[in-house]
Image (cartoon, rainbow, N blue to C red):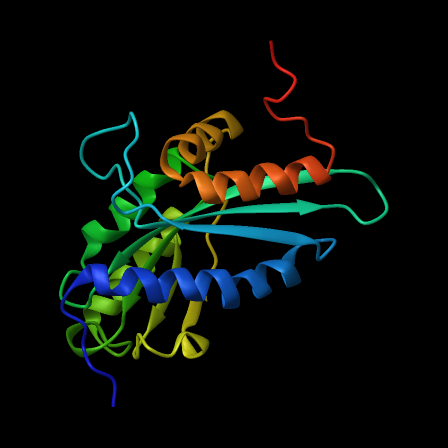
Amino acid sequence: MAIEVQVEAKLYEPTRLFVGAHLRQQLRERSPSGRLQLFVEDTSTAGGNDSGYWSKPDVSALAVSRGEFVPYWKADLHTFEVKTAAGLSESSVHEANAHGRFGQYSWLVFQAIGKCAPETAAYKRVVKLAAQLGVGVIHFADASSPKYWIIEHWARLTGANAASADSFVRERFTPTIKTRISSHLSTLGWPGLANDD
């Protein structure tokens, strides 16, 4: 039987693991070429110049895909707002939606248990509002079993531009992840800042 998690921060690592393994695979399957790398980061306490209300997605992931025969590459930033069942409300959807200013796809991740189980009115209101706003929804009963997490519906493309996503990654991803991203991009022929004066 699943145990209701009371502390939101205890859901960040399971979310990071789900995104890094299971969502990564599904994004690869949805990518036209299937050639996609995903760089996942806990951004819940990361700094940044954008302060204020609803300014820190809990988990973020940069998805970089490339063509197989026609040379192209594309990068999309996914942001994830994480909530416990007790902390879930329609405001959670608006918070996740607000993160659309940082990246191309915004998601709400929550434990669907107790007052927010799938058969409840609270769950249905949250999922309906998320669909209306284009916020993707991922939910689970047991936080310790990410392979059983459910993507209720996919996020829609936001209006965020690449410069905003780049700024977010620069300010909020750790040096280790940024080095891995730079290394991967260099294999795709992107010089990054190495040749800037």
